[in-house]
Length: 156
Image (tube, rainbow, N blue to C red; front, side, top):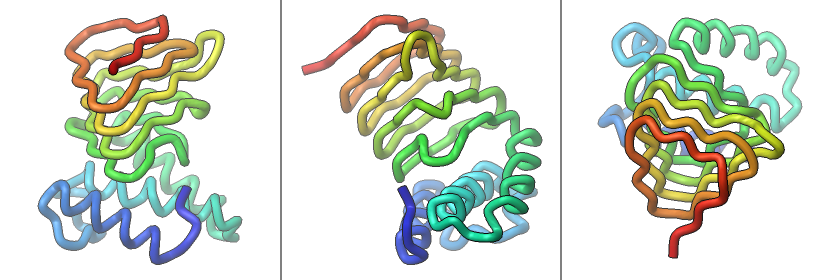
């Protein structure tokens, strides 16, 4: 959870550097929309967590950009280091928890079915993945294309 302005700046800078961008600006909405979306997502999380008066109007702005890019990603689901590879259909349930340095492709659905999934750190989620239900994935996983996971899966 992002609770301070300094933490917000640090996370935005880290996620921008993953895309080889020094500072994310408004014009990146048109030239680098995924980097701009991640900045808007993190700012939205900060405003919600600090109970800012701007959180409601900013939520509308966040939703407009989410619809434009095809994302349904609620606040405070992904830890820092998120890297969205392609824009397109990405749906994440609000109760899911995903760790640091997650790399995610389009066509991913992380949803609820008798519980919420929990995904560890340093996980690569390939195109077309479906995670449904009470699922716990450990760290350092590479999950390939078009898999449907419904049961608990741990690595050692």
